Amino acid sequence: MDGLSQISQISARVLQLQSLVSGPPVVAGSSPSSTATAVAGSTSSTAFSDVLAQELAKSSSSSATGTLGANRVPTDLAAYGNGHVPDSALAPVGDTGKKMWAPAAAAMTKLIAAAKADGVTVGITETYRPYDEQVQLAATKGLYSQGGLAAKPGTSEHGWGIAADLQLNGAAQAWMQRNAPSYGFQADVPGESWHWAYHPAG
Ligand SMILES: [Zn+2]
Image 1 (cartoon, rainbow, N blue to C red):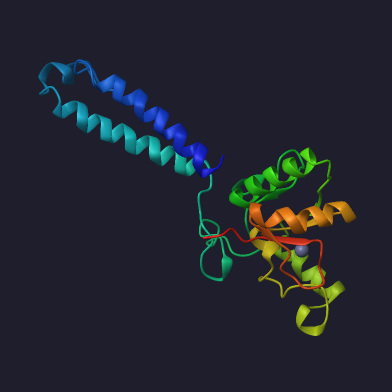
Image 2 (cartoon, protein in one colour; image 1 turned 135 degrees about the vertical axis):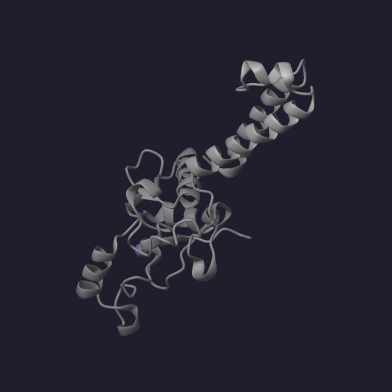
């Protein structure tokens, strides 16, 4: 779920809650005795803010809402470490069977759908790459710093789930050049036309 739909969902819930508490002092979740003894109004508003806080907490824990922090590390994944992010902390990219950091997954899902609507197929080869695989890749393809094709293990954008290696024919590559930036994606490694990383504006 993206931030906007989450907000609209919360707004709808707030309206629902307001309608519950704006009438007589009957408060959702309160015990029967509290309505009898409480001063009308004050109990309602206290309970309302409690319920609202619970709703907000629920919605923020049910899906990732982190941002990209220093060194473009997702703030909500930073504690796991690059390449050590559990599957459950990543979000699916549409029906591709691949997972990415939630905001990147949402953006890539939209990108793929938009490309499809334009008659272009954007395939995904690889997204999240665990640390062990980063080590393997460095061993077989060599490090960037030595002219190879691999990031130093523990520094790969794939290790944070913010990059995708894509399968693109000529038309798809051209489509990506034109349209990917508006979905927050850029080919940010020189010579790797398949590697697209999430660089949202702002
Ligand atoms: Zn890549």
